[in-house]
Length: 80
Image 1 (cartoon, rainbow, N blue to C red):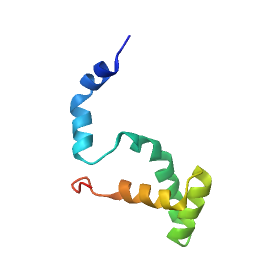
Image 2 (cartoon, rainbow, N blue to C red):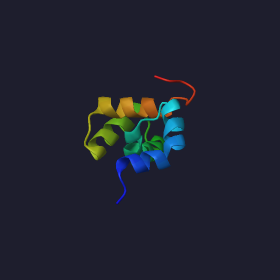
Image 3 (cartoon, helix red, strand yellow):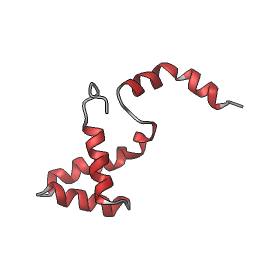
């Protein structure tokens, strides 16, 4: 049986690089939302309309959508 520490040690270098780039462990949850964002951005006129659609589709607030998009679009050399 694998323990958590075994998994962390196995992926230590990757986890360190992700952390240094400002990537949070939970960011993987937003890949579908971001893909939807890119698709909707091609067809909808305003960013606000896209954000409201994503909020409804993913059952989160429009503010959360905005914050998630902002976080995911940051350069990896910026750390906040």
